[in-house]
Image 1 (cartoon, rainbow, N blue to C red):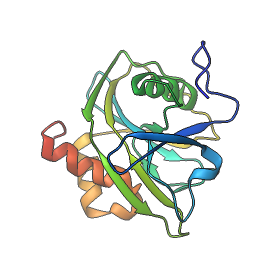
Image 2 (image 1 turned 180 degrees about the vertical axis):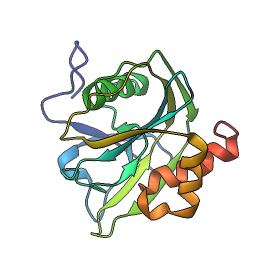
Image 3 (image 1 turned 45 degrees about the horizontal axis):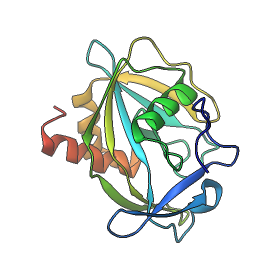
Image 4 (image 1 turned 90 degrees about the vertical axis):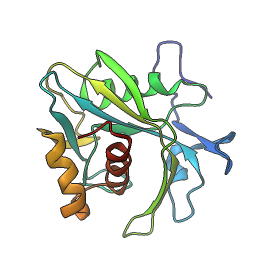
Length: 185
């Protein structure tokens, strides 16, 4: 199933399943993919910045299946089958936060991770990371985002070291990669 011509997600959201080499091998309903035995699948993460260089962090809604109530990057999600990742990033920024990026670029195209939540739910994703430039403040969908804040990127990077338990595990790992790549200071 693919995204509609207007860019809306399909009625039943699906994720792209991947083999160990990162190649697509099928699809699965998103509602069924995140379990204690989550298969490897395609996702993305986005860190957005305003024109003053501040990073937009979001706090995941308590309704989220994985890591509810945890602070994380600006937006993340799963491309629909056949949907280009950049289109998926734009779609999630619009639906989760009411924002349209004025610039978007990949910064960690090969990021991959596996993390286990305290309740046993596993994240197992090939998850390219993007930077976006935004204007304006978000208007979040409360089913997705319960809070948001503009922060200094260096302060966020320090938090990933000093208090990683406050953050999503993927954002902690991604910040390490962003620092190593020299794209975050």
